[in-house]
Image 1 (tube, helix red, strand yellow):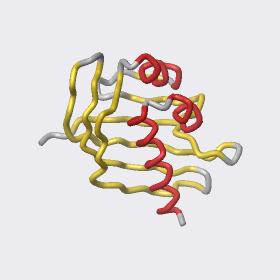
Image 2 (tube, one colour):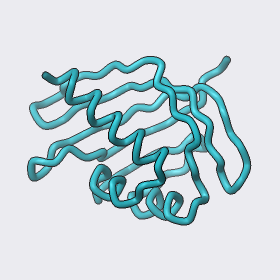
Image 3 (cartoon, helix red, strand yellow):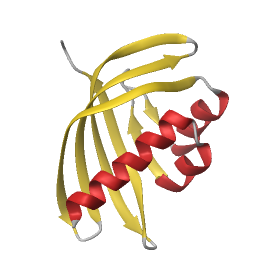
Length: 123
């Protein structure tokens, strides 16, 4: 059951990123989000949504290559996802292998990303 849940959550987030679907991202990301980007900068939900809304960040390809997860508590999942990404960042193409760590928490019966980090992986 949890494997299907994790795959569904991650697929929903991935599709929202690819579609630039800010409404879906709004539902999938928690108000209290703490996210560390590949440059080490800390971002909030508002920061993340603003990047997608403005088109400053636009995912063009997001191919997961490895997904692992742990149920930490009944309402908390930690996910480690490796993916090959192609993203336009302020119009500049960025591509490569990246590793995400995400914490999903169920609040008011809705699973949302509450924390995360992404790092580039060496080739």
